[in-house]
Amino acid sequence: MEIFTQGWDFLIAALGPLGPLYLLAFFGLSMIAVTVPALFRTKPDPLNRLKGSSVMGPRKEDDTPVRLRYDSGGRQLERFKPYLEPQNEKEYTQTRMKLIQAGYRTRNAVSTYHLFRFVLGVSFLAIGTLAILFQSETPSLTTVVLTVLLPGVAGYYLPDYWVERRKQVRQEDVTNGFPDALDLMLVCVEAGQSLDQAILRVSNEVSKPYPALGEEFEIVANEMRAGKDRVTVLRDMGERCGVSDISAFVTVLVQSATFGTSISDALRVYASEMRDKRVMRAEEKANTLPTKLTLGTMMFTVPPLMIILIGPSLYEIGSVLGF
Image 1: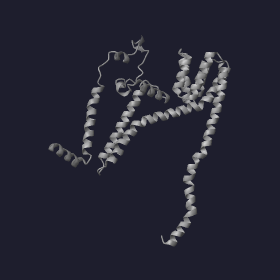
Image 2: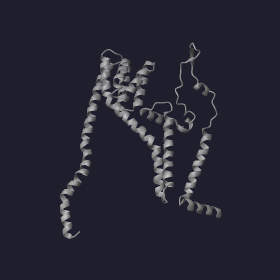
Image 3: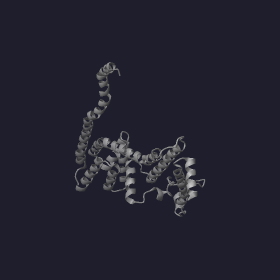
Image 4: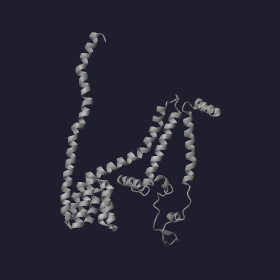
């Protein structure tokens, strides 16, 4: 007990009141540094030999085999997937769908997302710890919490904010360009083109002003040309976009194909509704503008006006009273 007390007093004298906390953090980081390589060390899988190999075609004249299939890369995170991806299927599906709606469709998108959360959280936590250690004065417990834990939490949730922001930007892009895409699709269908050809033409024309919407239509066109069922492709598009207008459009096309009604009539009615909704959204933003300007008007107009009107009187009163 006496040795423990002496060690405690030595830590406080050497590192300050938070010396034991520093020592505990040092041992925790050391245990992590020792344990992580052992966790990531896995036995080699014989099937992994086939992943790095390429299918060779006929040889050239100089006996150099022609590569018909190349490794797409991005396999660096394969061994870390059990530690980076959520093990719960529901949570994994939600994270995967959120990344797809934000435009990240790669195979290792979920692993990369969780890797960035971990790396940024630990990095910001380490920066906050170094900032505390290099302070000349002894920080209080509140200062330690705000300087160390707050940046760590911010770094951990920074990728989540980035993905959510990207998702909102893409959905806004899709929503703004969808009425124009429907008008163009209606023109193509009425000109005699099939729905598949109309979607391909729309994807080419819309990709420049609205890249996100053009990319979605391009995916639909490619999947249809690959032989995938049209209903499944359209429903997948509605899930990828996450926009109610796209989901309603998919429902209209599915019902039109199911009941055998004219696609051009359905597109004409729905395109008219989309144009009306766009006008309504513009009117809604215009109606909220006076409310948003009220706060700025009160902050930047009323105080100077009050100073101009009441300031001279207050100055005269102060001069008379001797303040």
